[in-house]
Image 1 (cartoon, helix red, strand yellow):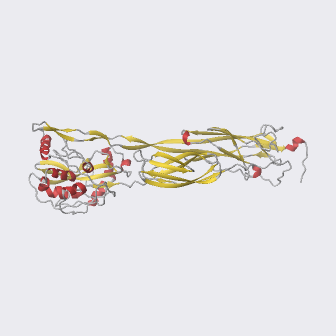
Image 2: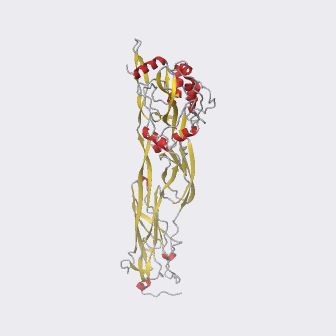
Image 3: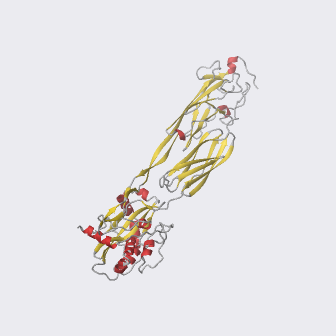
Amino acid sequence: MKLINIILLILTLLISSTLSQTVSAADGEGNIDHGGGGMGNSSQENYWTGDDGVRVTVIRVSDRKTVTVPIDFSNAKPSNIAHFGKVCKLTYTTGRLLTPSTSTYECKKPDKAMPKIVRTESRNPDIKAIKEYFCSEYMITTISNLTGFNYKTLTSGDYKILLEPIAYMTFKGINMAMTATEAALYDQRLSGELRKRMVSLSNKNLPLAMFLEVPDLGYPAWSGSTTTPASDEDIISSLGLGIVKFKETEPPQVSNNSYTYRVNTEVITSVTVSGGRSDPDNPVTVQFNIGDTVYTVGNVYYPEGESQLAWVRWKTPSKPQTMTINVSVSNNGRTDTGIITAKIVDLSGKDPPNPAADDRNHSYSAPSIPSYEQKTSASWGVWNPQWHQNLVWQSDMNWYSDNNGGGYWEDDGEWKDKGWWDFSCDSYRASLSALMSITPDKKVPTALGKKMKSGYGVNQMTEANVSTNQSSAVTEAQTAVTYFPEFLYKTYLRLLEQTNSGYRSTFEFPENRFSTYDRRTHFTPVWMPDGSYTPYTYLFDCWTPNGMLSVNLTDSVSINGSLWDDWGAIPVTT
């Protein structure tokens, strides 16, 4: 019979029943402390040479579940070792039964030697060195590589590393590997036999090698003796563990913004959400309270250290006003609020006055053409989480008797997915382009191409083109206003009428109430000097999650003479 089978048979005879323990929940930061003392006497069958190690398990903070198979690290190379499988303290204290493993014991020898963990009569481990070692980039990277657990995800703040000291001992002539929790459970099964033979190791130096300074992961801080043996119950509930914790996950945060909108306009209102991490297991939800309507945007995702735009599409009211939009963001009971101020304005009612034939402006000098803020393209991204499958065998060893004094162990475990969320970013964009054309009105009798006399009307055609790969998040261009040189591009304007809607839209002057033929025209002043006549148009209200797109436009006709030249009349001067 192979040595491992002999060891398992002996362990089977020693372990006649199993134990289940639970602990209460608590919150706190990661921490490690230690104690211990002299080892006392040993025998040829029960002794410890001083070889130790550490069991490492990655724990998800939100539900305190293991997400990796525990890994044992040791500077030694133990062989022919009996053990209880790779099971962490959290698993035992949530119901897992102590069970001998049929597999060959494995541990990893790190490239950089670990500091000593468990105290002996001749050495007193340095707790500072232990903390620095297991919090180092080297060790975190090693754990990430060995478990296949993404480094950035591991250090995001949503996970912690559970450490458990291990002792490699000989008990009743059998070489064994045990964590402090396993030793305590084992001792209970043996009615105190392990404590009786190896109390200084099993109930003092091993469990006191690591304990918590403050509560964490449901385990209390240890406030008992650090120099005398602890009971099995205290070990199971409070000792033999340390925790490496990364930066605390921040609560979600939402930005405060302000907008100026036009009446009766479809707009996109967005906020930036950041802080912590949001994935399908812990999603962020954003609510916009606009007027009497609450808009809810769910499943807003982003990785640690990043942010995400969240937006709603809505139509502004028909009357000018200032609106306060309350925004709230929530994630697992953590909330933040923000305020958006939306000023709704009406650009109508600023039409130029009726021109008169005897208007004069001898002091006129051509003004500089204005240029409002222009933004012709925008881009944004949407974080897309994908599940990274990580199948872990969850062992469940059971003894099946053959009713003849023998039997066999069988692993009735199952594969469980202990994966995590990875992120990719889907990129979106929008762009706005436009053309503006000013031409003499068709009723101008002496126009030639773009040449005309002053006093007549001009027509305008503005064509807008919006391009995007996320149409649900982008509006068409909805507003165009034209300013004129005779008013120094101030005071008066014409709010153009959208004559074709959609991403390929057109805008023209509205019908002029002073036009005899109800033409879509603007009359140039009869006093306009010869030269270029250049209206300026601002095309805007193309909304995206990343702001409004807009463009400056100009075009000209050439003035040469006045309408009086066509009428053959000499105007009366004043």
